[in-house]
Image (cartoon, rainbow, N blue to C red; front, side, top):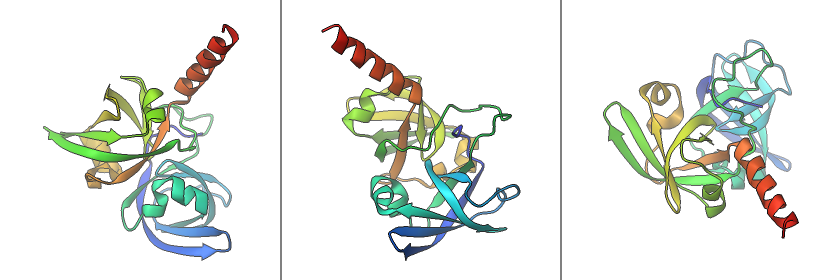
Length: 200
């Protein structure tokens, strides 16, 4: 479980096939202090397992299906967000994020508004149907508030701190991002659908 509060960013430096998985090596520092092999780590919002690490790198294995279903297969040297798994003693500063990506979205508009940046992200209808204006969504693992909704896209506003501390400042129109719908929204939707079925 994660919170969507990014701890560090890094850069993909190598991608190697290892049997049925692909091993990704990232250059990143500052989150290895109490890290152990086998720890869960969110990479752009995707929950992965730490296979190897050192003071300035982390390696994870990714199956082909995950590479195709997320933005990880499209990474080159784009800045990548990292968050270690939540400890029970931690503050829940963002919202409950599982690291189970529901799909990807595409940035269709990027608008500078003063010191903030507004992003319009096109997404699948199923994802849009589960979103709520002023509710939460994880975009590349970042806990963000949905400003408004349209038929096939949603709008988020990025403040200067988030622009500086995450990959958001480097994103451009056409870039693909990972999306995870708020788990509470999923549960409510499922409950309502099942209730409607039972009541005919």
